[in-house]
Structures are given as C-alpha cells and as structure tokens.
Length: 371
Image 1 (spheres, rainbow, N blue to C red):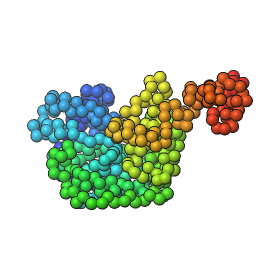
Image 2 (cartoon, rainbow, N blue to C red):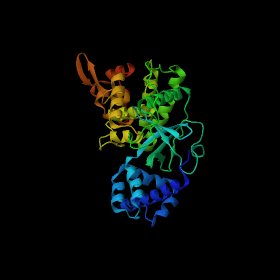
Image 3 (cartoon, rainbow, N blue to C red):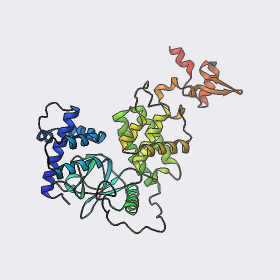
Image 4 (cartoon, rainbow, N blue to C red):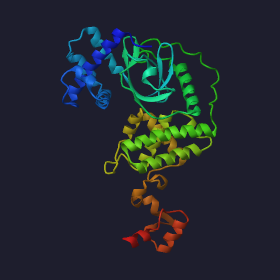
C-alpha cells in the first residue's frame, strides 16, 4: 500500500529540509545551497547523509529547535518523531494487503508493517522475496515508512533459510504482533497470533539447510571483510563458518544469519586483537556489531558462544592471521620433556619433528637460512 499522495509530497518536503540541515551542520557536500538540491545528489551521497543522521540523532533535535524552514507545528512534530527511527538490516519479507513486512535481522526479530512512498514495493524491491536490505524506517503520522533509500544485498536465500525466516516471523508476531507505529508500543500493533502451547520444531535441519545457512553467512562475512578488513580475515571467517556448519547438529540453523556473521567476524577479530590501534587493519569490535545491525550485547554473546563451543582463545594459532604468525608466541611454545620451550630456539631436528607432527606451521630454521 502506498502513502497517500499528499502525505508523500509532504514527506519529501520535510525530509529534504532535514537533510539540508544535516549537510549544513556536518559540511559533507559543498555545493548544496537549498533543500531542493538534496534530491539531485547521487545515491551514495544521500546514503552518506542518511548514515550521518542515523549516527547523530541530535541533528533532529537541533533541526526541531531551530525550525529553519519555519514549518507549522504539526509538521515540526512529524520531523521530531523521526528520532524514533529504526535503522539497520532488514529482510523485505512478505507483501500483505496493507503494507510490506520488513523483518529485522537481529535477535529477537521484529516484524514491521511498512508503507511504500510513491512506487509500490514490487517496483522497488526485486522479486522473489525475501530480499535483504539496509534501510531507515521512520514514523509518519499513524504508520511506518522507509526514507526512500534501500541498499540491497546481493544474497539469495534457499529453502532452509526461508524456513528459518518464516519461524522468526511467526515468533515476532507472537511476541509483538506486526508493528505499525514507532516507537514500538506507541500504538496498538496488529493482532497477535494466539500463543502456541508447544513450540514448533525447527524445519530444514538437513545438510541442504546447513549449506544454505552457511552460504548466506559467508556471503555476509565476505562482504564485510572486503569493505573493512582484508582477504586474510575473509578466509579465516569462511573457515570458522564452515567449522560451525560441520558440527552436528549445526548451530547455524538456530538464530539469525546476521547474528552469526557478526559473531564470526567478532571472534576472529578478538583472537587477533583487531581493536588494538597498533594493528593493521584496526577496527573496534563494537563497529562490527553496528555494521551488521546487531546490538552490542548480542554480538558479544554470540562471539562468546562460538569461543566456548570451539574452545577458541586469544592468540589461538588456528585462527591467527598467517601473515602475523611470527608474532604469535602461542604458535611456537611447545612442551618438551615437561619444559615449555620456544621451538624457534631449538635445534633443527626438533623443529622438523614438531613440523611433521603438525605442531608448528613451518620449520623456523628454514626461514633463518633464507635470511
């Protein structure tokens, strides 16, 4: 269902005015001289402005206080309500008669009923559904809209993941109903289903479902590592996802793919001290949560679960960046006849024996000879 035409015109007017204010405060684009210029900016620049607004909600408060466009009170209240925006990754999940269901990617999932602006969602979002997008949801009068920008992730979903999303959708409706107003709880949600006495058993627990879940998660970690880290991190994250997929039963069939992707990157980063400014690349672990649209507590919990499940610890040689192997003392400390020794300082024969047993990645004496 579309926003009424008059409301759509009003929305774009207010949104352009707010984005013009954001740009004036932050100075992101130099050649914007009026709110009308906002709509003519390239998509990536508009997305940058949107991201700045999402990170600094105080920009909305300053706009409301100043009211630079001299808006009437009713319109100022609409802009003021946008501080309750919900920004992150969503599954554009199902088209209903009144709205499109946007299913949040975090745990527990929330099902939002979202109105389209001037174009039906079937013309904006390619089929088939579900489709993963990055979006900002905004309250508008008595409903929820999106801000006009949808960044689509080129990830396809198989039957196993779709069944998992269906289950998450049912649980979201049981918990909150379909949320049609922001902030959550500000208006009655769509009717909830009658809670089931017995929880349904998860479907798709076979190898095909595990493969599909792994591919979706790997797609997310690959993209994150390309954007923020490097190929070494990408390969270690792939390795960790595959190891989790091989466990029986695989934990990847429980919970959201984005939460697992966040936990996997967090775990590899934690082992390699990614948040240490002296490292390159360097990234705060909380930035990983934010990029995946996962709450910090959820990202920490998922990483801790993975570490406990697989016995992963800081400096763990199995999850250490290969290019920094020389700097990891845990790789080279071995117990020999009851004594803990740095094998790099032992005779070549001992090094070769340790290498043949798979205890060290290479024979250090060979590297010394090369030098």
